[in-house]
Image (cartoon, rainbow, N blue to C red; front, top):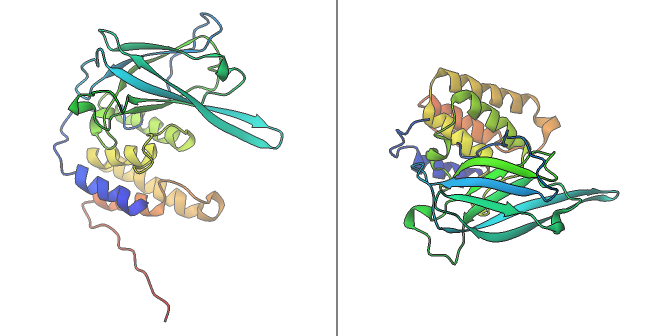
Length: 249
């Protein structure tokens, strides 16, 4: 999986990415959950990559559900459709089927059967939700819907916010419906490489050193050593590392 993901990076990095600095993964919302009513309800406004509101568009949403059980855990999801208003806003009341469940993430994208505009093709947004969200209204603010790897998702994030989003994405579970694309943490890594500079070079080098130090203890991790090493060499304007496969005689 690592090689195709960074093949995507190779395609997107040379593109015209001179936009201002949400990120590929837009992070966990910091807004407080209001106490208006018991029914958990999500509020948000949807934006195109140019920050114009997505108006009068049918979109499909999904929330993940998770519950700890004595013999393990159980996970499933609830989904539905909603139409944005004249300002791009939507309100999603979650039904009784979420009662007693943790709601770890929210994903939204244009409905497959809807006649979405060309600029919404493959666009989506995925957000990790706060653990305390059990009831009331949670305002997610503005969500930018763009395809995976589009740097405009991060245009409202400064460097410090991007660092926090990277850490949150490593712990979170929100991601695109399309499992053929990479993870949110890899997408944020793409953005770090795009921005470049000594600060990001040192940050990625630190992440790589941590992975190598804790390789035996941490087990599988994404992004792993190959992804981080590739990102580091690219930010240093060096060639990508080569994988050497030795075939048995």
